[in-house]
Length: 518
Ligand SMILES: C[S@@+](CC[C@H](N)C(=O)[O-])C[C@H]1O[C@@H](n2cnc3c(N)ncnc32)[C@H](O)[C@@H]1O
Image (cartoon, rainbow, N blue to C red; front, side, top):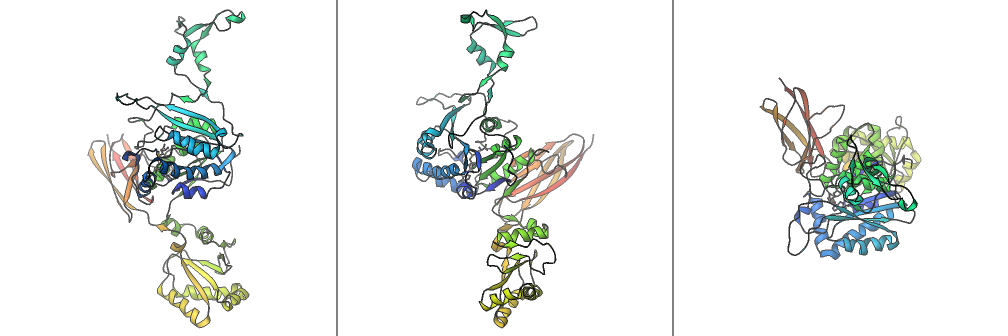
């Protein structure tokens, strides 16, 4: 399927209930969701930030019915977002799987659109409990939106030992060590037993079934591990995405966590949207995507609750004007220059001027008043006669002189000009200020300390130990709560970069260079 040119991949911070509403109906090919399970354990709180704790309390206030209600209203929206050929994979476990299937999925998708309950079995250390057996699987419910949904052929590679056991044939070895058995199927049709090589037999694989036993959980110091308990293996997402989508399709994960789904979707050339209500989850996902960034990676928008002040303030002036007027509900002028000081029209038709600066003074207001008349005298007269707003000035802040001039124009000329602060239109904040220092503690071993200042508290740090400007920030450590790291380096020069992330998901950076001598 061709890529949708108008689509941009997105990582969005927010409660998925709200964010889902802003996504176009019938636009998504595949949804994978791994919502917080219905278990009352505190380890369920992964990130521990405000958004997550609120959501945790929301879900557990009133027991299982409450949890089901909480999830159901979200799944209803997800169903609306799917294309008629789309499908949904909901990952859960014994705590609520029966209720989820009957009360949510059958109800919303219809029983006839149930396709599979996939059992993801994983191994673990079995502890004896006199009341019940250990649970060693998760359920992944696969529902199609309509009967049009199709899956791809996925080959299932058997575990060699299991497969040989199931064969129940004696295995022989050639002198070169190659293993084979006598293939006797076909004897009933008069075909003589013949030599079949085991490697060829195993290579063929089989079509995938609904019990997945070959994907281990992430344990210990697995290289994929970021450092929170509910992280899912990339292999699992690879399988689901390859099974139920094609290159260029749009994949949505409304509980994106540490970004497994979007990272895999990106690697497999799918387009994607990831949502999480935790700013930490969104930033960890952002770092993970940066880490795997290569020539084939797609660009994406990171949508936090607040915009970065520096970005807005120092971005290209014309781009800023256009963007802020749209946010204001108006229409920007297409012409970049000779606009006579008018940059666009507000929703009510009145001209708008944008100043990308602070502390706007009296002269700006005076000049704007003159420009309004030069621009369209008839419109100006009409607005004044009707006591309507004749024009708007948008800026970061206004000085006392400007405010007084507005009052004077109103009293003397009956002209209403409105001063609109950028912060009245969009929320913005300043990113943390960070300083990084290195301390050589042993020959080639260094200790790094990051100190960060920001109004909202700092949540965590990410570290890139082989930083270069042209590759951008590619963190080796994605989720460090301490701000301290110790590391050994080979001989040569190295640049280390750190990013500090605050409670709003805003991040600031600093770098340091070190030299390791023989
Ligand atoms: C089980 S984790 C997902 C883990 C993910 N599959 C991975 O591999 O990293 C569930 C996530 O849902 C998020 N979450 C909980 N309630 C939410 C809500 N109402 N809207 C968006 N995200 C939510 C949590 O912050 C958490 O990151």
